[in-house]
Amino acid sequence: MFKRRFLLPLTIGIIASLCSLPQSARSRSQSQKAAPAVDEWGDDFNGKELDQTKWERFTFEGGSGGTLKVEDGQLRMRGVSGARSGVRSTRTFTGDHFVINAVLAKVGAALPEPGQSGAWPGNAIVTVLFDSSGRNRIEWILSSEGVFEAWAIVDGRGERLDNRNLATKAPNPTLSIARRGDEYLFALNGQVGLQKVVKNLPRGFHVMLYGYGSSENNWDSVQVLMSKKP
Image (tube, rainbow, N blue to C red; front, side, top):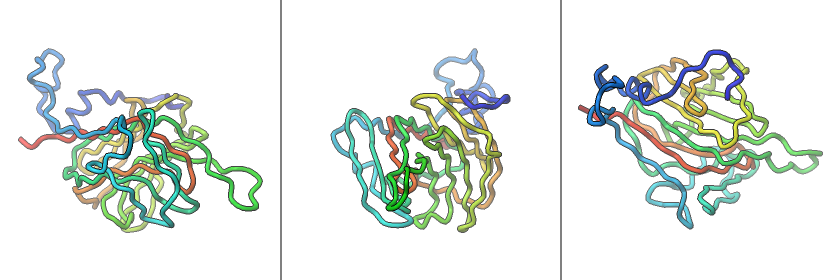
């Protein structure tokens, strides 16, 4: 879990709150019929190849290439040096109340560069991508050393949102980004470690998974929950 004292559970009640549902729908005494009304989209990577109805290979910085394969119930990727390349959802989601859950199978070090004595730490990144240029995006990053970073990039200007004290040793962590209007929540295994307000981002977005450069990043599943319009 986070090396942090204050944690909040990202339970169905939080999802209900994110979706701006009435209190009656969040009450534990309500029946199943009163559960939060959400649209769900996801992929568990159980096929033999990438589901092209859900994903496309996508690069918004540097060169394309590297390796991508689906096997043993995982999406396994490794890009090329200096690139931000991975997969992007073919679907454009629209809304400002949602939760993205991505289960990470493995994050490994980047490949050594020519003349480099050892490998640099790698990372795995869950991205809320608001355009095709990468100039507007929210990112939740876990390094191969177990260190988290949260970033907001607005009009090409990046701001690190965390205070550099979030880390984990949990295996197969679930990385989550939730949005509630202009508020963004960053969570690990259902526990929120960071909440920040980021203004002036649009409602339309894609989900992107990647690792910077040649980072090894393998994923078990992805889920998007969005509030249904009344």
